[in-house]
Length: 419
Length: 161
Ligand SMILES: [Cu+2]
Image (cartoon, rainbow over all chains, first blue to last red; front, side):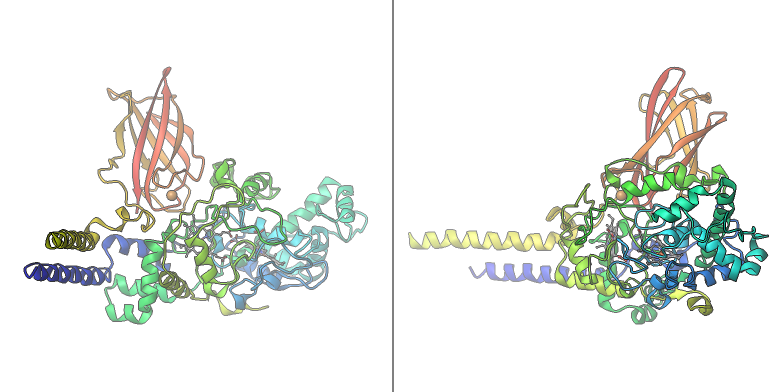
């Protein structure tokens, strides 16, 4: 008996020592982890590639014009809705709502536009393959701007003629109301649709060309809206310079612990990777169908829509050559993995953009983490997530870390308000 | 009698304690993943992977090598590869039909895109367009090559870091 007691004591001491060692050991980042962290760092964001489908993508005049269009409520059926109605610069270009309010109510949540110039696919389901093609969708959506392309080209003729012509060349003469009705377009509204179908192909093309150029100008504006550096970026900056005091001031211990979980045990970087914290691919994460909304099959429908889209990269309205449209030409267009798959949003500024998910299903980041910890069966398709076994403390640490991704917008201040 | 029983119980208790303490001691070395499969992040790439970019096909019919045209394996960017195919004795294979697939065996998913060979560049070189990797870690890329009525495949391992 007496001999055994010191033995147990010794073993306990060793265990304690190893425990302490493993805790202190985890305070340093391995070389591999450092390389992962530098991949998430904003300094790794490459220069924005040209958009071959938009010849005006990097034209400063076009961006100024796009800025005006983005805030101009005349481009709507009620005269009250602009892009900025739902994409508010002060809310990181979102609106704080579960479902967006335009002239009606959408069935998805407003996404941020910050940094989306980097994404080959636009919308939660990627049903558009460029920013200019994307911009044309809300303009003709019955629940967003609610107008028609003929209405919009009349507005351009009336209010923006000089600006338009300085960028895109002469504006066609749309003054004959017989040929160019006040409202006409391939939209849900039967009267506007009938008016559109009654026009000649040449007149329709003249209208569509100006409409397309509006999209290209708006895209040129959106390309200037980038995320600003967050405390997380200061931390990585300091880490890469091995500046320990700066690391300490950048992130709290809990935030660092959350970061460690994010790239480790919780494995968030599988999908939220790269400097924008999104792989811009599509994943089924089993987010429940929102109340009072039909089942949303996400990418499964989105890919069919983009392949058939009037304005996709291979369309005659695109400035790209066929060989430029690799994303579209080699897209995965079928398979179970597309069912209820959605695009992971950027997590930069995510603490400022509640509620969360494609129909605002979760009110808080705590709800989001609870979802990831116990992923439910997906409404359709297969949920890619595995249970994480995180403790409440660990979940709180990840939430704390997500808060350290807020760095606001990096854009000239005049672009963040109505012109 | 009573004393003996006590001894047995004591030995059992002490053995249990030693085993538990031993497990705790060994935790940092064996890692939590073997104790609880859910307590893990992403699995590390399997050890002993052959990530060489030039290999003999499964049945030994072809020597195959790949290179990314930009010289890098970018994350989340669609890009182009050049595949070079030779016979086992070093003659370039032209006019082959080549199919591409692959995925992440540890995640149980395929490639996010549908890459294709879009040009026979001559001299055994083929252009593979539409390559894209959207996650870090271990990937397999498989080419099934048919030339002169014969077919063979080759699986390349690669690790995105
Ligand atoms: Cu994967």
